[in-house]
Amino acid sequence: MPYHRADTSAQADKLSGIVEESDLYEGFAPHVETSEIKTLDFYSLPKQTGKEPALRSFTEIQQLLQQGKKRDVKSILRENSWPINSPIRSQLWPALCAQHLTKQNMLDGFYWEMVHQVFGTTELSDKPIMLPAFVDATHCLPYHLTSTGRAVADRIVNVLGYDCPDITYSPVLYPITSLLLHFMSEEEAYLCLAGLVGSKEKTFINQTKLQNEVTWKTVMQIAKKHTKSAIAYFQRICPSQKLERVFMDWCWWILAGLPFQHLVRIMDCYFHEGIKVLYRVALVILNLFHKECQSNNEWSPDNIKNDIGNALIKFCKKIPVSPAKLLHAAFSIRGLSTQYISRIFIKTEMLLKSRSAFNSGSKQLIKSRSSDNLPTSQSQVNIQMMSHTLTIRELFTLWSWLPVRITMYQPVLLYTTEEHGCSLTTFYVRVEQHEPTLLMIKTCNNEVFGAYCSSRWFERNVKDDKGQRQAYFGTGETFLFSLYPERAKYPWVGIEGDRDLGHSSELFMAADSKMITIGGGEGQAIWMDENIRFGKTDSCKTFNNPPLCPSGDFEIRVLEVYGFVGI
Image (cartoon, rainbow, N blue to C red; front, top):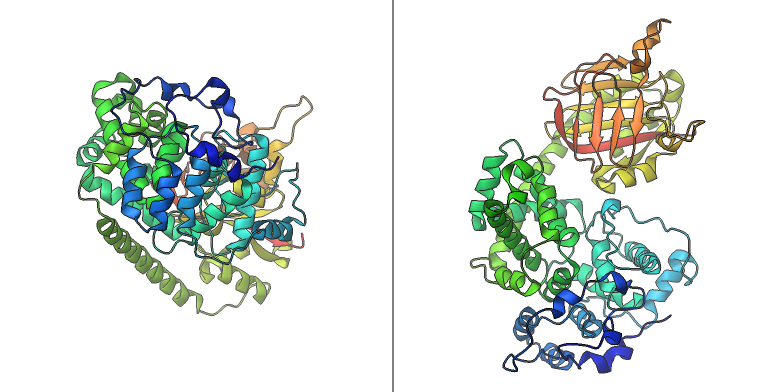
């Protein structure tokens, strides 16, 4: 059923306080599951006395936009708490996003032409669509979209990826798409995204891994100044947990944690002012959480010290303030000007880029050395062009450890966190059907180690005769290795004899939706979490190896997985 903004134009200016039950969900698009949306909380507020100013209409805001009075628009958006189901957003959000649109040549039908180019039809397929590599599959938040709405979101994101090839990493793009679709048609949502992504004046959506890292580090720096007490408290109760780990997920406190009615009101301001709105909200969340930790046993140090990041998201789900109070607190923070934020952002970006340039320069010096002794020169070229972990010398060593038949094939990079994001779901999509694979890890301490995995990762789904998924799979051809600082190969313990070593010596590979494991028996040689961010390494009976890095626990800088062409 097509959904047109004009259908709600008359309603958009009728903003009475309470609506009849039959009209309770009048503001939502057809592809929204309205029964899941809690709107009654919004109407349990005290009735208006008649002295409060009436909510502004879209016509008033549109006139201000046309006159270029952006500050007046900003004030109205901050102060007007339109009901969550108000039809005003079907016009307001597209108008706000249209301000930032740089491609003014988008004629009527442009989006559907793009859809036809990408999919060969404008009909919505009932089969799942593979999402672009820049999407974080673990955060494809649909909110209250129906299955049809989710399919529409998938299609929009694919078309945007086709039209904007410079987007290489953008985890928040899918949730923003979903939110837009609650109040408008597919075509309008695409045009809104095109405006947000293409904006030159303000930042709305990060589009590369570097931008993403600079942003969370900027939020962390701002928090250290503006939420000093909260930061000091968190560091005191869990000194072993790095702040970086908490702030990497800062945007999910808002997008995955806050109730829907809070999120919608934040978006009213975000679509006009940009990402700085989210910065401010994040600071308020930190302060509120710190305050609750002092008075609420649910958030006592013992309950949160092992995972503050997860505790923050749980706290946001039942945040003790209304959307209006949350925004009021956010916009009351002093000393947080756009200029100040930009200064912190640029300083952080320059620091990261300088480090990247230094590391790249060092790597090139090593790669310029002699490159003999490989089965083919093309294998060397492939690795040099693709790898963020291997030097040529390390490649020589690793190649000598591979089974001879495998060295006859050309390596191909299947998955890397540098390009495909940190998602176990994406890892499986890109890797699981390949056999064998070479898994390379570079930690934040520059240790390099990994494993040659003899079987497909898809075998995690294979069931036995009883219909049970097998916990471990793989063969004795699997081996571990370390390349830096130590160089060593750790083959299967059973490869040198026929004696029965027991079940614990044959725990080669294991995986599910939450983790990957290689090696088992009184420890796991390599274990990684679902976000491919943190891991641990222990001695294990399968390979009789020492821990592959001195500390045992490690933070992943880069994960690369290679397959071999022609096998």
